[in-house]
Image (cartoon, rainbow, N blue to C red; front, side):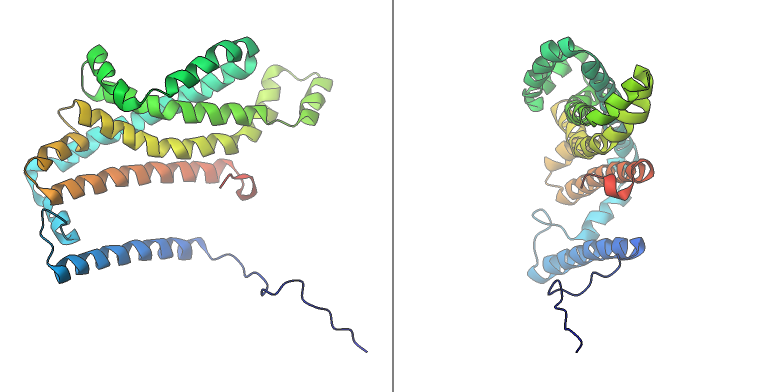
Length: 268
């Protein structure tokens, strides 16, 4: 008699993962559906433009040359990407310094934690006083938001090295550079990219905060100008462009993560 073996689980066998294009199509479909629902809701309920403009009205503001969309978007993009790149480079270099010197970790790292607790909105006016206003100070504000998450996650990643691997390198008389190059760096990359993802959100916030405080160009500055005249469609357009810059930066980080790290090693 043939024995009946019960199923190990009440669920059907897991199907193969969907192709990447199907996942991206689903994401795009959700966004398009939300925009269509937004358009229909505004028209159906006859919501006034200064309260909630329809997407078509928001897009129409791109044709207005007085807003200088291309120039202002370029300025904000420079602040976002410049501050992010500076935070990335100095965050990783700072982590390398801290893991090579316990004394430096003991003395300087608590100070960095304390400084990071300062609200960056409160720090912004001081940066304006010290460095005037413009693209440079806004890049510094963006850097101040991006630096610490990357530093913290990189330090953790570099310290997560397996003790057995460290002992093996020491037993083979490997140099400090070889230990870092072949053991610590590859093992820390998932943590580094995790901090980079968090920093993408903070980079956009830092640039906009700087433009809100004191600036004469950029999308944040433009939002302040058009808000005074209740030009809500232009405000929405500026918000969408700022969001697009953040999404672009995040996608670039995802592409780099996909190139440098295998799927199983990524921190979700």
